[in-house]
Length: 384
Image (cartoon, rainbow, N blue to C red; front, side):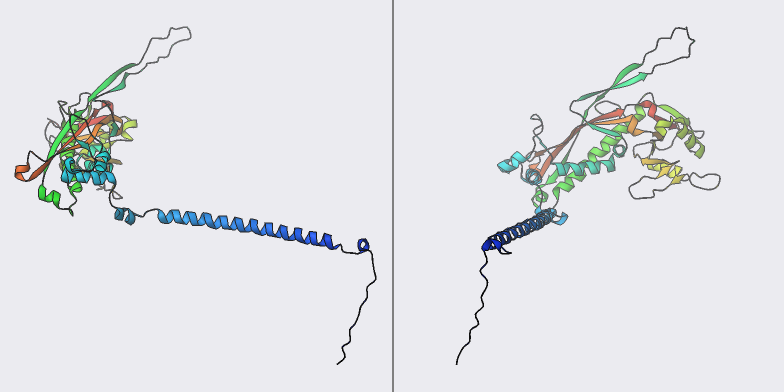
């Protein structure tokens, strides 16, 4: 078989006269490829960085423990250390547990409770010491607190153009509040301490809260100032805004007179305080239209109101009777101060009651307080 080949010829043309320069075309192609590669790499890097950032954020959220995970992780080292101290005493604690506890004064020889335990104490104290929910509370570092106050104001007068101005100046004083010590102890059986499933911390918190809260609330209302705060019922300078006509009953007009006897600035932030028996009488008061002056709370956690102001139940206020003061109205935030020196310190005594199968826990708290502005309160006193 014969194959035929076709031969094409091109005119010999100088290289420099051709339309395309092979070297320039190759250079341009390489440059275009490089630019495309750089653009692709930049875009890819940007997208990769975005993905990396999103993954990092997602990992952070996933690593953040939920409430269930926090519960599963168990108590902190401070909680575990304090729990070991409560159950077994300092003699059987490890070095890391000893370091985790803050020591109280060397003379007392006790350990301060860990933060979570203390929060539970504070929450329970409000149940038994209701004045803490409305008064001004401050932590102090000394055993005696001096609070400056103004006892007199400047007085200006209208004078003629050439008349001499009269002299005037404010006067100042200071209130002194001694921080008293509140103490109690709780005996817990060895078997109870050895029961690992029992929440001994909650039980201690509740018991101590009851003891401290009851004693503290009573002192802030009726305390005589001897080794305890001076209660507002024994504070001189508080004005009796209303004296009832009946020695055993309170009428609506007397409640209104009490409200309006307090200066406006304090009344706008004021609260009524009375015990449960007095509340039972006041809740029955009605207007001429048959409407109750007492208004129940519209939401859980809010107190009921009387004439638009909250009513706080103070168990230590006296019942209505001849000559007593069953109701106080005023701004506790402006006029009553509470000073906490030592929130709570607990000392474990495994020896003194061991023959009875008990471990004794001594608790102490240092607190002071009293009326800082008598003008911020008004009494309703029963007719003698």
